Length: 342
Ligand SMILES: [Fe+2]
Image 1 (cartoon, helix red, strand yellow):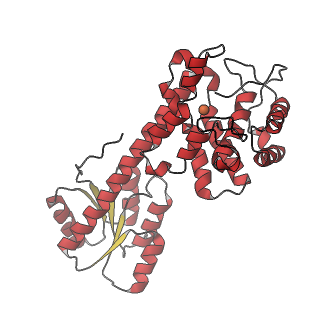
Image 2 (cartoon, rainbow, N blue to C red):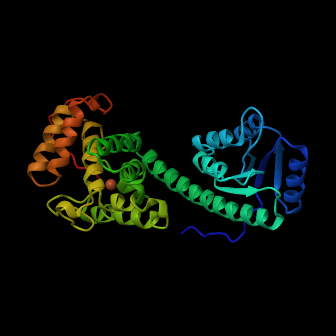
Image 3 (cartoon, rainbow, N blue to C red):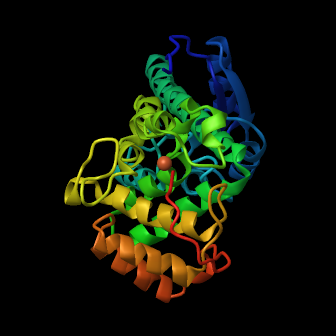
């Protein structure tokens, strides 16, 4: 789906060095190779540039007054807005201690003075290639998230559903002691799990009444379509099983693959508990909002029917008792029958 372009733009390089001669040498060399270069004379100016300009790579002198290169590098890597920018540390010292401190500060590469032109350009180009690939993936992820939010935006009844799901399922994942990468996958899946609904016409998606058999058939395809849309994104490796299996049921009666029990990925079982809860406690086109107590009662009944993982549901109830309820959307009590989650 996402075509990788073979064109690699030259890129913007920030050079920070307090020695005028070093700065000029790097500036002229890189400009001659077609790069856009910003040269500054200290760490504070480097950080200010990073705040205001889109930079693709930083060449940092280690020995600078006030904020030295290591500290600048640490600040770059500690900031989520700049941590993916590659940093090359340039030093006159070839000592091991310097390199170790540079690695600890998060530097991506090192160059030792006197600089070798060929080596410098090879390292700069190699790190820039990686940076542009990361940018491309970030753009693809942004498109996917935007698409997912635009689908949510179509239905006034599900407003805020994605964000709530992202927060609550990640919190429940932490409560269950899941590894960090699965918690992150849950956070992302909260937003994108229903992206496959892009293939469902609005007349079905927003239909206030019950769906016909054919309409249901189409609706039940959304986890498969979502899986297909997100499959090219390597960073979505742990998100894909959640997208595909968030409508499976513990007794095997769910869709699209009829998985049962622990064959359903644990992350999908976590998301579906929160998804069902959120659907029950908010107004939908086909049902009123239930109170927290009623929603939990309904879900408990569904656990005994074999739909949801009883162990995860117990944790969810405990999680609610421990104060999570104040974050969760509580609707007005309603006596109507349980509504499903589309
Ligand atoms: Fe869904």
